[in-house]
Amino acid sequence: MNTGSPISEKKKYDRPENGVASKNTAKMRQAGSGITGSIENLQRNLKALDEDIKKDNEGKKEYEDQIARLSRRKATLEARVAENKAWADTYDSDIGPFQDRYDALVKEIHHLYADATVRHKVAIELLMKEFQYHPIFKRWNDDFSSTPFKPAAA
Image (cartoon, rainbow, N blue to C red):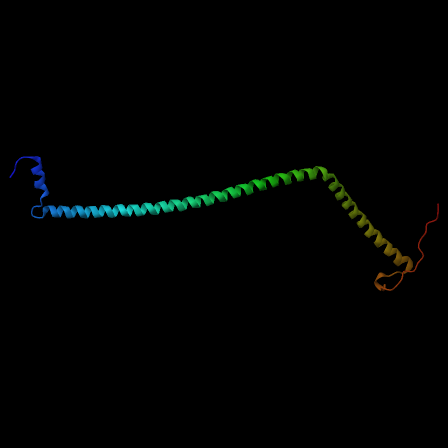
């Protein structure tokens, strides 16, 4: 009975005929389940990604803190280097002349010592020649017996 009204047309399609509507309903339910599963899977993935982002932000903060500590340490070391350089410059200008004088005195002492060794050798040879002194046969308890030389008063 077709009355021609739109309401009766709608009811006509809502009624299952020979199981066709139940097949469509099953397909829709299956598609809905698949979509629901996909949405739930995407929500789990989104939650996992949010946790990863949170952990990455925590790791980023740790790196930023480490960089801040290293930057402070760098600034401290640069200040110490500048301070030490200033001290070294002052040392060179204030202490440098004394260091140069010390080096000159050390050279002079080396020359004096070298001269003393030469003169000592000559003196030993004189003792051997004039006083029969022989260093190889000298014993630890031997006393040197001679009269010291006194130059005439002028």
